Image (cartoon, rainbow, N blue to C red):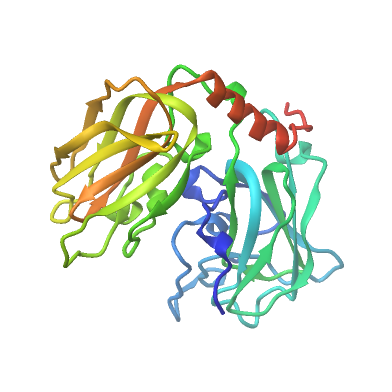
Length: 336
């Protein structure tokens, strides 16, 4: 089965972008935090702890009374959810027969028991063992938390919440912002190759801890070069570009350039410049023009950990950020 297109969107719940499992009513056999690990689930047979076989997932005890088990996840990147994956990898005789997924939107930093206004994203649906279940979501609201309920008990390896981040404009400093940051609303518009790593890694929060958390292309055997285009969080003027090749040593690009789109034209922000392996390169940008999209060209191929474009949103860019936030529905639940 081919995965839906929305699985290429960022996982808003992943620990890699700051997600957290803030509550679960039970986790006797396997910890709730495993639900949002970035890595794919693993299984090591005959690996027993004090409570039985060790599973890479969340697993509750067998219920002996009516009811269901549940876990609440705070999204690392609040946004509009396009699809959800409930993965029961390696759970066979101990997977839940069914699951429901709900979501809510909260301001501030509420405790789990203060969350209200839950909306059903995935109605109660049957689950099979040891497989990925894909559920398309049609809601256009911005959410900050999701709740996975399993009926009645059992184990789930991973919960993926794919979607588009929508930042709170009140938490942005328009005059000093990373215009290419995923958490600020930037998105990958296209790329030439993603053989070893997703281009979305380039604009992910934080620093890459290993080479696998960056973008890396296959080795080219022609005269061309690889590239990636990024739609910025909003129209803005770039003042500083950071091209980070950290962890890429024998496979860093030999050189790179950055251009910005102005209408139908492209202007140089960083002219083609030699790069060093395993280095954070920072380049002042003197082209003080508002741009909406940038194109990073690497020559001829290779890998890069992060792309940062620091600058200022224009009035039109800030208005676009506010409009996306407003159109996805204002937060209603007040935190403590």
